[in-house]
Length: 209
Image (cartoon, rainbow, N blue to C red):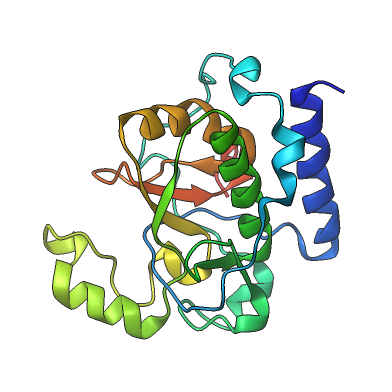
């Protein structure tokens, strides 16, 4: 099975696992969050023994510019909880310093990070899920987007749905993400924030969820 088939097979497994609840697909805006002990999650390294570089293809023409993806439609199973109020039972560790995401996003990012590592690229994580209190603090510290700042109004950040990450990227990391993140359902969707990536596989395939 070639590398692309492996990725497609694994992503299908993730989506099927959460099938009845629609893969917690979403899109977003910014994120740091609650902490659980990181779990060792490099069990997929063997899957990526073949460098993702061998899968390289041009960036898809349908990839939209940051800011052109439209408003996030959060997964139905999270709406009842509210933005920034997601219970720990709905969050999964990504294996990095206690960071967490909604389960399908966490699994997809684990695959993505393993693929990057196989290509010799290091992806640091600065922020992930943000609870409401964290959103309030960041809005106070960084200012609101509406006022020229770098924070969403508390209760509206896509980090509050556990779907977005802020990454620590050098030039090679940024280039790798722009070439490959879409394969795992992640898109660069916020203007002025090249470090901000959101799990929204429907958007990657041309939709705007």
